[in-house]
Length: 193
Image (cartoon, rainbow, N blue to C red; front, side, top):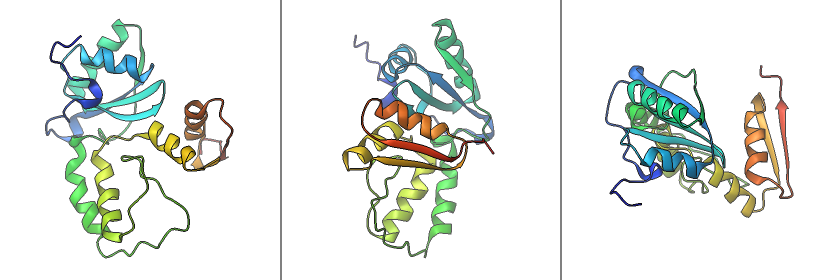
């Protein structure tokens, strides 16, 4: 049905508000279901992370996240507030982009011997250090396309996925994304720290 409403994935970024007044909500449902439910109402938020075929994270003002949580709960869609400092990967943290870009200025990124994929474009980083810095800084305020990134990496030939750092959350997401395909995924430290 049209109704003139945009799919949530195409929804406008939230209006500028204080990052301190923002929140994120994890949602466990197929991405299409999340999109459909959010398209029914006009909420000023963004799908900030497409983590797996059946998991996403919403970012926005605390008020809008609370409305979304109420709506999702009323539809018996599992959701939970995540304990983070701000609504990352949304326009609510865009003020951090320029200072981060300035901090990256002058860094000569070494040429990679293997492809390195960006989480917001789901594609390979560009060759120039300046373009790499711009893309890296821009990722603070743009949605993460993790499902498409892992899919693109697999299609480019990646078959081994190693999670570095405490926990095994990303390893689980990779397994969910790639399903029955042939690959190996492991966490170096699954102890959660």
